[in-house]
Figure 1 (cartoon, one colour):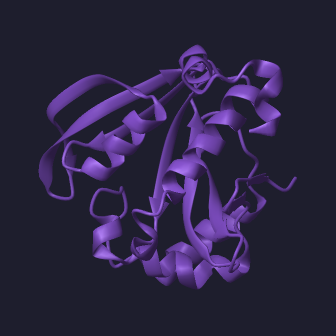
Figure 2 (cartoon, one colour):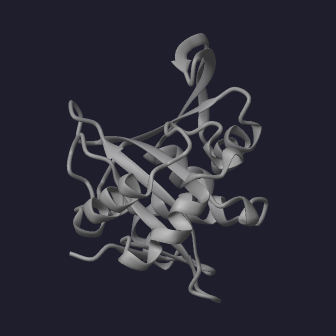
Length: 193
């Protein structure tokens, strides 16, 4: 199975071997890694193992992250990734995450990619609720979630030991009906989105 979604400017596709160098470049950028769960230096061996797994991964396997590469249609450049994990105890809920190479920040690509991923999750996987978490200091991330229509459900204070210090998180969620109401997408018209 090959996973591929399309937006106006992006292909959201299965990882491929040629993605290794750009993947390692943004994974090793301190600004990109700052609020992410990996540490730098991010080793080449780990990148190869990640790509080997994602190249053949299936979306929507409960309790298993699936990440897809973001490719610019105009250049073929791989610029980041989006991912999701369907909850182990509830197959109609998922968490989402995203990373973008710093050179492509503030270009609307993350919004475009996550918005398309939400259409896939709600329409094709028939999910009911999608959740996202972010560091309270990651202003760009929580503003993106709010622009997409996610609702802030919690502000957790120093709840997580993260890279050697306690950090605080915002928890966000959006229900399928909230997404549809916000984007005025009746179920049968979302394929055109």
